[in-house]
Image (cartoon, rainbow, N blue to C red; front, side, top):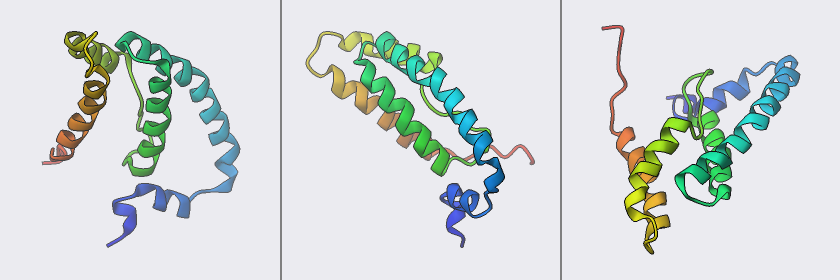
Length: 123
């Protein structure tokens, strides 16, 4: 069994064409110029420190590129996710366990999503 099945970036690195590096770098910088301030704004909307938005954008991008199964996969915070988290977290605002809930929410959602079977549209 190939490790590329579980960690797709391994196969991507093996088959990467170095001629694409310049274009991939330009694309990465373009996305970063938009995604970094946007992720900070989403964190502020959710009521947490903007640095957590940066952590979210950077870590999710690295994990998404390493373990994502699509070349067109978009990872990181979005406005819909931000508003959902903000509405959930509103009941914990001002409480001592606010940040604990803020960190546990995506952890439990991610673990829950791991249990889902992918939808097979070919059937």
